[in-house]
Length: 433
Image (cartoon, rainbow, N blue to C red; front, side, top):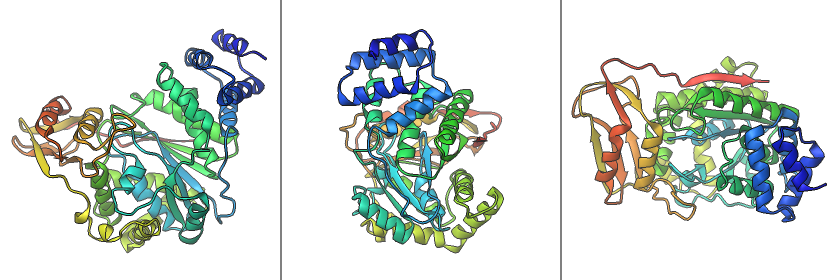
């Protein structure tokens, strides 16, 4: 078998066999196939696509390139959640302890952020003492004892994806639905979940800018999960404006605490309840989403969800006094208001531009080597559809740098004010096999 023949076959629109796909993955990981041939293969896939069988075969081959986490010793159905990302993506911080409070084991491996703001791990590390790098044995014991743990991905998990994604990132082949889907699903399946709930975002702050592309990606991932024996569901959500009010690491921790205390933004709460209902049903803790939603609301209102978050932070070394008193979390030296230039209705809050502004303030990484400022970020005071008066604050910049005024000027194109209220829909659709 020769790699050039596999490249040519896909270039001409042929269907690759599982043997050919495994040959490519195994030999690329081992270094026997050079980057220039792997780039040619990825570009051929970019233009010709892959059918469901090819995509599932690629996913399986990438899973088999490294170690898999075995969660079978943990009682219950383990349900994982993945989001394709966005701005103000606080969801996991609320969702994980909320679902765990109902007896659904949450054994989650998360990542760090590159771009708008830090990832879930960076946000959690804004709480002093919190450890995200734990041995697998400790991780498993925490889930067995407390029902929840969140750590960084092990370096031995899906090495094929790490190598192939780095190549795609510099060779113009990132935007390929089969390659995106196999990348996401290989990591989720290798992490040991029995069922997977996916949030696929669409809009200006999402990777998939239009709903049709988001649906295609979601449907592809659901089919992959089904083919490899995992119950998989996807929710298409809107990211044309930031989720919630807070964008930034410590700011989002505070918003998560507020939400678990039933005092958070309504859109964040609605998204958490939608995703959580699917997770609870998948775990067999409720017969239908409506019953699951009732249980989740009861856990928030009773304080059990917040108590689970508090114990989760303590279990991983975090100082719970920062949970009990979130005003102790890192705070920026400068807070600069962005004022409405005229009265009217908020008709647009371009999530990508607001996210970029947060990154420039220090809340995210422009490069992998960038240092995150936990205190930096943006807090919204208005959302799409809200009324605003001239001179009223629309958002506030939180920064320790001297670039706040310059960043504020960049936001004029991101904020739109019109004479009529604009409609906004958070949940677009739910996709199940």
